[in-house]
Image (cartoon, rainbow, N blue to C red; front, side, top):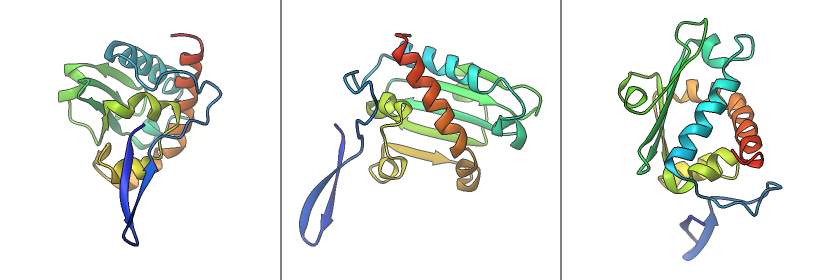
Length: 158
C-alpha cells in the first residue's frame, strides 16, 4: 500500500494513502491499462449521459484524466452543454481541457474504488490537478457517483 512519511515531532509516521473499506476489499488494488480504460469509458458514458445531473454539461467543462505511467488517458468534454463527448488515448491526451487530473497508476484502481484520500494523494505526489481548483471542487459530488459506478463494474467482473 502506498504511504506518505511525515515528520510529526521528530517521529516519522506512515500515513496510508489507501484505506480498504469497501465490501470487495479482497480485490487487487491494481488493474491493467486496458481494463482501466474500458472501465472508465463505461463509467463516464453511464454517468455523463444525462444533462440534468451532469455537472460537466452544466458548467460546460472538459476534463481529462491521465494515468501515468500506464499511459491511459480518458477525456470527457461537456463544453457544448448538450452532450458529453468521451474520448480515450491520444485524442484524450492532446485535446485542450479545462481540468487535467494526473493520477499515479499505482493508485488508479484504488482511487476509482473510493479508497484513496485525494488530499493525501496530492500531498504525496500521486495526484495533481491542472486548472482551476474551484472548478475541480465543483466536480466532487460527481466523483462519488463515478466511483460507485466503477465499483459496480468491478463487482460485476467487468
